[in-house]
Image (cartoon, rainbow, N blue to C red):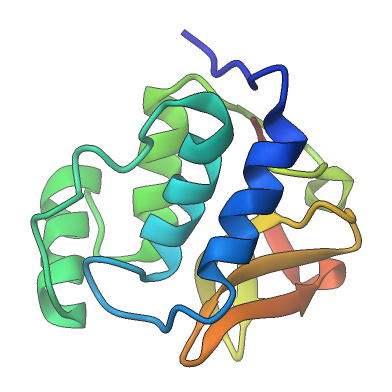
Length: 145
């Protein structure tokens, strides 16, 4: 069943972003994929990452889990798996992604998970010191939430 945003999704997403503003990147608890899944869960109640959560704690174990669950040792494979499992529809033109949508962004040559920020002008993910913004032009793939 496709995801449904709550009636107060904007407030819930905003509260989530505020709570995570300074929370650093940690594999298995606050990495790019779990951050995006947590963001979406904050306003839909659905955990996109349930098949991954609590099953890895570093990059090597994350990539091994991606390979065993999603078929390839990449963040992209995991995102496609999660989006497909929840029947999320991919945007044919990723730059059309809207606020709260799941996206893959190009960050220094690597595709990582993110969500479109509430202002709609950039993607947001987690970095070493907390939230990290990436230009909307870095969006490589996107799914409507």
